[in-house]
Image 1: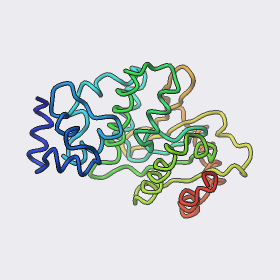
Image 2: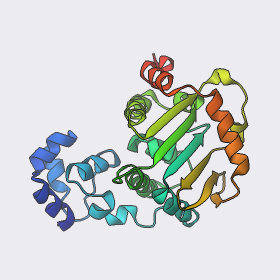
Image 3: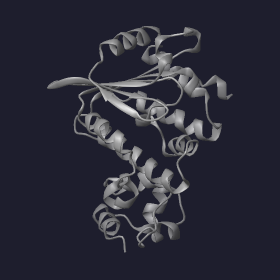
Image 4: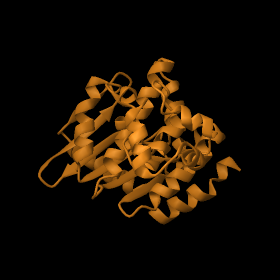
Length: 249
């Protein structure tokens, strides 16, 4: 049996029936999850982990283990310790704000094999927990180009946009949409994240077609960031736009 899940369910007072009710699956499906090798689908995994108050990696370590590229690991460490994170994305939603279904769709569009995608999705959800589930989460500020909100199957984007609204209303999360009417801007050169800590130098993460990299040469990025924030919608207008989502009606 999956002893880690069985013990977690017992400590949380959950049975297969009660867990199935929480997740919205057949009780027989939930009962199978304690069998060796039976792992919930991506969209259910995070819900199960939350219900039994465990990390995904504690319950299904093989799913998460070594599924992030080696070049990404230094940034994952920086990200999990930062006091402040400022992220800009021009074409897709930030990994820290993605639902499992959206992450699966994005990762499936690249060169990863089907068996690899599941592991990468689980690792991405684990990253989110490492950032947002801390006793004192970092101040996270996201600027997302409106184009990213318009890209994707409506069946995936509707719940993803609901998730963005929920996240945008968290006390230490600020989400700003960069409207299409803003025209050309310096962020078109590519996505980046700046991590700041009280006791360390600022570190940035830059992504491209081949791989991502970290750098401490962040002066130019701060100038780009200030420009992007100046033309992005305020927090309240962003939340209103996400709720209205006129491009999906």
